[in-house]
Length: 183
Image 1: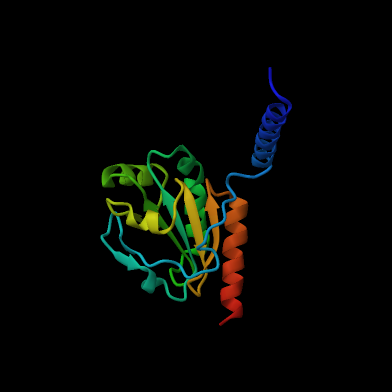
Image 2: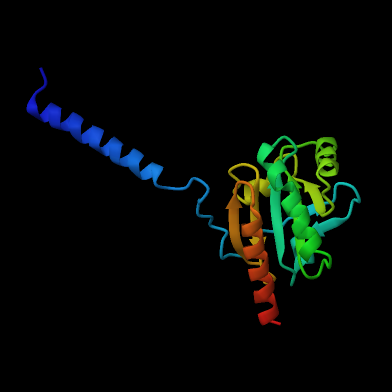
């Protein structure tokens, strides 16, 4: 038979767990604060999958860009592939105005190229290092994840999960408006 204090201890534990679960169900798992938002983007050095062109953070000075981490094996990456290409075609026609950069994570060059051909990706595509240095530096939880970086090199927004047309529109137009205002 439970003593009074044991009963209340068990009830308090049940209450605490219930409260914890209730709180967890009220939060959106895609909204995870990033320590990078509001801070300068971290340096990277990339080699384009097809052309061998080199690109680093310093090359993007003064140009807002979207850094998208993806993988050929990622189902959600398929959903956003055409949106990213549309953003590249709409705003990235001039590489000085806006760039879309895709970094394949835990992928092979052949699989990444095949995925890019299948989904018509024509923007700058590269692979993360074999050790995953770039994705680790950016604190990835998984793929897809995207970072919107302003012309000043500061991370403006982090998106966990597949991008939507609305998020892309809002973030890119906001960055371009800010870039115009500071010129």
